[in-house]
Image 1 (cartoon, rainbow, N blue to C red):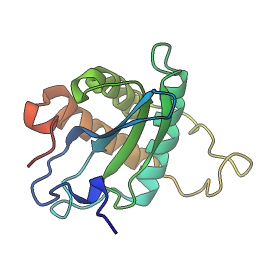
Image 2 (tube, one colour):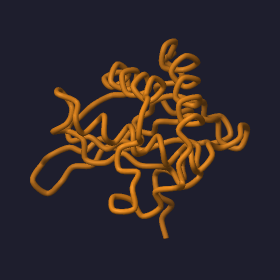
Image 3 (cartoon, rainbow, N blue to C red):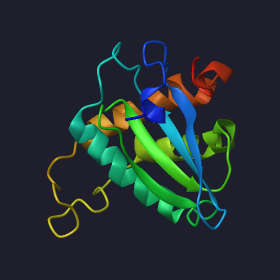
Length: 160
């Protein structure tokens, strides 16, 4: 079998950042851009805790799907199995820099969030107790301050 695109990325040199993972064109000609929202350095930093990752998923998905400018473009927001980040799929042809302001807003929302996590109930979620809001807020603030607020071109393009 052919190796898929995400397994061709050099994870030995991949930094935290915002990357275009791939662009797909549907049979009707629409472009779907998949972003790699990399929150930890693979194989060099500890992955996110599953509970923090799950809380971030609920908060960001809710924020993005309610965003006045982007809600109609959001196809998916979800975790990477390796727990080093998230995937964001948007309808449209975008570059990494195009969504940095949106990611800043999203991670600020998470870092400042108070109250009940949206969808964290037995009716709405298959594992509603598997969330850690304080840890999610800490990880969101860290990513916001260390990466998104000072992002470099190297953190917007996959390494060779």
